[in-house]
Structure formats: C-alpha cells, structure tokens
Image (cartoon, rainbow over all chains, first blue to last red; front, top):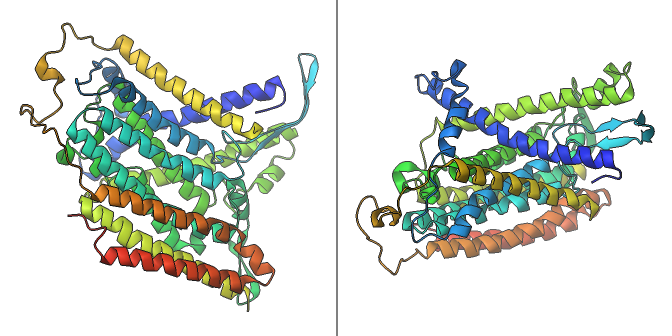
Amino acid sequence: MGSDFFEITVNFIKIAVIFLLMVQMVPLLVWVERRGSAFIQNRFGPNRIGPLGLVQNLADLVKFLCKEDFLGHKGRKNFFYAAPVLSLIPAALAFGAIPLSSPVTIQAFEWLGRSWGPYTFYFQSFVISIGIVFVLGVSSLAVYSLLLAGWSSGSKFSLYGALRASAQAISYELALSLSIVGILLLFSTFSFSEIIAAQNNPLQFYFFGKQVSIPFLPNWGIFYQPLGAILLFVALFAEANRLPFDLPEAEAELVAGYHTEYSGVKIIMFYMGEYGHMLVASALMVTFYFGGYTLWPFLTPEKLNLLFSSFHPSWNSILTSLILHGVFMLKLLFFLWVFIWVRWTLPRFRYDQLMDLGWKTLLPWALVNTIVTGVWIFLMRSF
Amino acid sequence: MNSLIPIFVCVLIVVTFGGLMLSVAAWFGAKAKSPATKAKSLPYECGLEGQEKESSRVPVQFYLTAILFILFDIEIIFLYPWALTFNDFLSQGQGLEVLLAMIIFLLIFVYGLFWEIFSKALSWK
C-alpha cells in the first residue's frame, strides 16, 4: 500500500473515498430515478422537500433509521444482519478495481523538514494486473448475499425469492463471462489500464493483412464488438437485478422477494448494493467499449499534459487526472441514465422468459460472438 | 502480496461502514414496547394464519440450473487463456492450429448446450 507514511495515508483515504463515492451515488441515483421516472411517466416526482426534491433522500434515510429492527421467530439473527453488509462488499471491491482516471505522479517535495519522494497514485482502490478476472470473480460473490438474505429471513416467500434471484444471477453470469472473452481477444490483456491505454489511439486494425488506421475515430471497443457490447449490457442488467429482470424484487409477484422481512436501514443497504452493481456495470461498459477515461483525439493524457506543461509537474498531473475523471464521470452518468431509462420503459419479464433469454438466447449469441471474433481476427491477420 | 493489502483494507472499510449503519439504526430505531405478539412474529403469509407446510418443496429446476452453470462456467474458464494469448500465437504464425483447436472445443460445448436445450432440461414451467 505504500512505502512511507504519507503514501499509506493517502492510499487509505483514497480507498475510503472511492467506496464512499459509490455510497453517495445512491442518493443521487435515487433522486434521478424518481424525478426521471416521473418525467417519463408524465408526472411530477418528489418536489416538496427541498428545492427540486433534493432533500427527499435525506428525509427517507432519517425515516429508515427510525424503523424498528424486527425479525420473525423463524429467522436466524446472525445471518440476517450479515446479509446486507455482505451485499455491499462485491460491489465495492469491483468498483475499486476499475481505474477512474489517469495516475497522478507527484514529484519529490519538502515538508516538515524531510523530503517525501516521488509518488505515483493510481486512481483506483487497488491496482491489479488481473483486473477483469477479479471483477468477474467478485461479482459472483453477490449471489451469496441474496441466498443468505432469503434463507435467514425465515419465510417461504423470501426463500423462493432468493432462489429465483440467485438462479437468474448465475445464468446471466455465463453470458457476461463470454462477452468478455471477445474483449480479451481484441486487447489481449486482463488489466484495465492497458485496455484503456489501447483505446487511446486512432482506430487501427488489420484488414486482409495490411494494417489500416482511421484517423478520426478512436480505438473504442464498440466499433469492434457491437454485438458483444449489447450482450454485455443485457447480462449486466440481469446481474444488477434491474428491470426488466426485476422479478426477484418485484412487488406483485413475491411481495418484494428476498428482502420481504427486511426493514429500515438494512433495505437501504440492499439498495446500495444494487445501485453499486449498477455503477460497476456502467463502469465496465465505459471501460471496455467506450474508452474509459480518455476521449481520443481531444482529451488524452498526453495532450492534457502538454496543455498544462507550464505548471509544476505535480499540478500538471493532478489537473490532467481531474479533467479525465470528469470525462469518465460523464460517460458513467450517461450509462446510469440508460439503466434508469430502460427500467421505466420496458415491462418486466416473466421468470421462464427470463431464464430462456439467459440460456437460449444470450449464451448461444455470445458463443457466436466469440467464434466470429476469433475467426475474423485470424483471417484479417493472415492474408 | 503487497498489492493485495488494499483489498483487505477495502473489505474492512465496507464492513465497518455496514456495522456502523446497523448500530446507528439500532440506536435510533424504535424499540418494541412489549414483547412481540404471536401474530407479529409469524412469517409473512398475506394475512392468513400458518399455512406453512412442514415439507417445503423446492422445484428441481434450481438444482439443474446450478449444475449446468458450473459445467458451462468451467468451459468458459478454459476460453480465457486462449483469448489472452491468441494474438501472440497469430504473430508467431501458429494462429491456425490454435484457432482450430479452440473451435473443436467450442463445438463440443455448443453440442452440449443445444442438447440440453432440446432435451428440455432448461424449460421452466
């Protein structure tokens, strides 16, 4: 985590801040969802509390905090309390592995009488060279929290809701993993930073043996893998339990499914986990298919470094990072809006339709995507 | 090992945050003034009383889905090293053998998938 005290402290604060970033997106997203869904449905959303209804979430949080903490006599208390916390961990870990901006390099400086050496701070909670596999593995842990929540509630509705939710989650994980194989064929690396760096160039690919470079389009994954992007997006919807795959928490179906018996702050934590998964899903889409935090040819780390070259190199690096982080956040917010938009537009799938979609539609198409990508790359390179 | 320490720190921060929220709720939350009545502590049953049969039967489809998931997940795991090193093999001129090997593997995979789709192992009623 760092060699000396300054670096360790900054890294620790960075991990906490990135997790809190995920947490504070929840009130923002809930507000956007309530106002946005109201806009889609041609009505007003909450607009009484605070200007534009912005304080509504605080009021809701206070209400939830004051609820009674109750569990029926068939429930198991320890797992019941552990399950919401457990649902936060996969989302937080997955979000921490994705780079949110370019690394910040700080030159040696003098402070308190000793010189603190040059540092490199990466804009992610932890730097893992196996980023993709780590995110996939950790997202699979979300199934545990669903099962634990449903089983420890001690109610048949919760148990069935949890089983259905977990069956849905694991079915769509297959399509998710297969879509990522397409990305791996293109970029040949697991590490997110290298994938973003590869997208920082003009569009270049092999075409019947010659290398072709198109100068005005960036090297984004969406141009190479449109089908893979759609498959990944749909599979990520199902992983986050969002409509139209909303059945495990649907209201008319199973009385809120696996979180029937939860009240108060624990439901808030489940929602945090769900919105955290949404956040990770949007971040993955942005990183794989839309260039991450760069926007070639306008906003790349090299061009921004050149722009700020009259500053001190540390400030140069910090400003570059902040602007690229803004780029990433704009793309992320766009995808989050698409999540919310789709939720309030499409009707919910029936459960057997849902499972059919996962196994009989997404999985074969993901296989087709893999085979076609492999064969295409081979043919284009070898002539 | 050094680069994995932030992961544990992150998990610790998340668990602390969760524990804090739970304890704040326990402190602020309404307390039950009297011991819970029998009706309150029954599992939720849409207002009816005690419809729980003792043998709750879970449909077998869940079990089948889980087992099929494991099998296909392991096949996907075999795809990952291939996808990672495919470009290297191509630049060394051995792309054709590697591609054909993986296509044969995927054909066995696809045959298995289509067999189990048509045999209605995945049909939910």
